[in-house]
Length: 277
Image 1 (cartoon, rainbow, N blue to C red):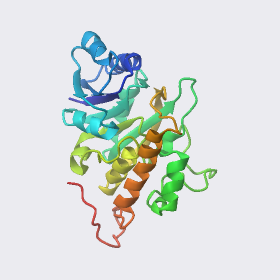
Image 2: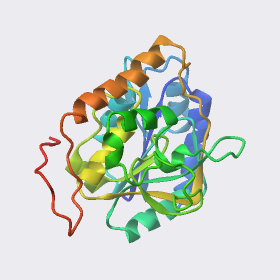
Image 3: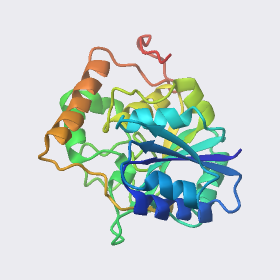
Image 4: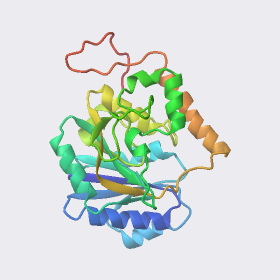
């Protein structure tokens, strides 16, 4: 199996159908499987999948478990050499997956990849490149973590040598809306940390990929469309709890002592105490 596509869904029946159809078209020349991780949907999502996509695997949760945990449940069923993790509000370009696979096949040092993301109006989403919004960027600078993200635009955003929209480049953080990961790397570093309920899971996993000695890439030679339907209301208690709670978890996990990324030819100043079981 070349590719496993994991789609996390919660009450997005119409969007899920649209997403799955786009992946079927994109996978026409690929040996693939699609796994839907349904997070306690109360609409007709499961009935729609059973009727229209009976051959796809479905894992269900009786309660809303969060994105990291839903992904982990599906990841345990994946058999593909590569794994694509997306949400139901995603539309894939018709040749996107083939191009992504070719790139990963040619770059054996690549642990993960994100692509150029557009909104429904065709506007470029800058999170495609650095995987962070401004709030997370400010937080990581505040706790001193930014020094470990040398390839992320956290300082001097106007510098001309930073990666631009159509430039292939190594990055630190994969976008949470499109995480294309080599399964062998995931087997080595472990699955998502389920303490990150809705936010921060991509930052943690991306950093662990780099700690293990692999690279993350931004690949703009194709695109995905993100319908941006899953955002919580920013003044809601749920948003405050999960968004800022993820920052607290991240700080507690990494602030006391940071692992160093091993780069060939550069000695490690101290031995890392970081370990993923």
